[in-house]
Amino acid sequence: MSKIIVLMGAPGAGKGTQARLLQERRGLPQISTGDMFRAMKKAETPLAEQLRATLASGALVPDDLTIQVVEERTSQPDCRDGYVLDGFPRTTAQAEMLERLAGGQGKALLAVLVDVPFEILEKRVTGRRKCPVCGEIYNVYFKPPKADNVCDLHPEVQLERRADDNAETIKARLSVYERETQPLLDYYGRTNRLRRVDGTRDTEAIYADIEKTVMSD
Image (cartoon, rainbow, N blue to C red; front, side, top):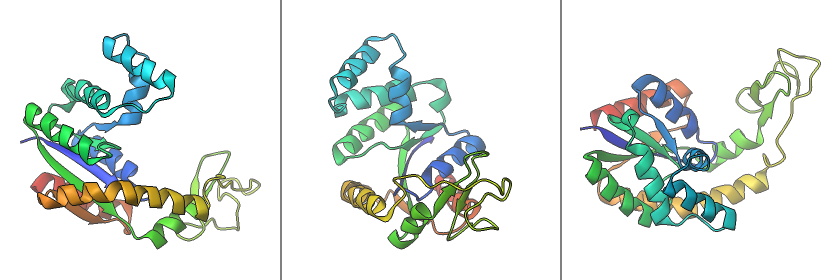
């Protein structure tokens, strides 16, 4: 049976990278609500018009409208053999809606958490630096440049740090994530559909575990 993979992970956990790898290597489309909403804003359908009106008003997109957008996107041919959800569901109410959608599509449902301790997440974010010329990403803790704060490929260029890559911001983001995500972890844990993957290792090791989990469950 094809699967819906609910990929979960805190900011900095690397779930976006893993979702991309699943798409490239297993042919499972990465479906994010942000991408869907942006695509819908350009479409000419009654559902797109409803979404545009909601976004224009500044209101949050209600759950019933969100699940309609998810259903329309995941009914496309590329999702027939399964897909990866990134950023949805965010609440247990949305998770229950997804259950009904999965049943209607005849797909199994599995939640995979890329699990990384707070201390490492904080260093991943606060240590992040980027070359403004080539876009190369460094980390002062895990992948430092050869010379202090300059790009290896452009030694005349100072690396940049995003304004929101600071300890206060990441602590606030992680607090929100934990508060919003724990009910979902409990929800999927109760039905034995939650799998935890050690996200402290390198990208390929994490992917190997996720792929094994996705293909064997």
